[in-house]
Length: 331
Ligand code: RIB
Ligand code: CA
Image (cartoon, rainbow, N blue to C red; front, side):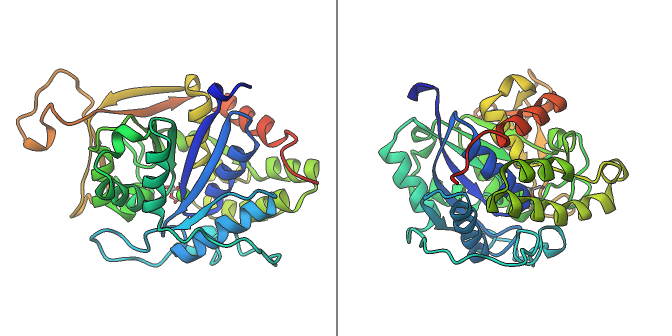
């Protein structure tokens, strides 16, 4: 694969079990190069997120710069992490952890994003799968960032599918709605991979067992353990997910979109985020083109995003499996 076909990525994440799935997909896929990992509060505290990112890379035998980012929402009060979904440690309460010698890159995550974008203008895709405070802060540090990044792909939001934190709000957007609205109105090429598609892909725990049996490696063993914990939460909420003892892969679909956008149907339109009140965290897509709404929040000058509204779930599942079954781990 020549270098022009490789996606150079900064991964902004709050690992998090589905974040771990996404990271390992990215490390396993030949067309993705992870240049760095930036971390946020969300599924866990940002300190735990940063340690989890270091740990997941060490398990996989990769040395990738990891930075620690924002520790709370921009304006709204912070909330306790959902230990009941991802475990207190964010990885399904791993029974033990090997010693990790790697240290964090001491720059704040937002500064790392700006430094890398300035050094590689127009080349880097930012894949964001947690609350969006790092990206929002990076915009403040470098207002030209939309012209310095190649594109932003984010897992978050929902248009027609019910929310997972409120009837209208998805967790990543809910966690920092003010930051999210700044990201959706920044003007960079942006693709939203929301619950409209991530709730259509159920990954069974048996698939992660198969991957672990194939590799017999500490990284895939840890992933299998984490997913087993995570699946219990989804099985208790969704009967069709329980029927296959599965879970939603959420974050991994951001990387699957990156390498296989043809597996998705998208709609283009302005997206705004409700920052306060009963609908806090709602992502509103202007779905009716050609109407110039008079409200200033929808003036035509505001940029449009591409929103994933459907996907080929069996093909996405097959791509995930074939990618994770590749030879991508060191002995
Ligand atoms: O709503 C799902 C999103 O929230 C995923 O990114 C998951 O990791 C959590 O952060
Ligand atoms: Ca996440």
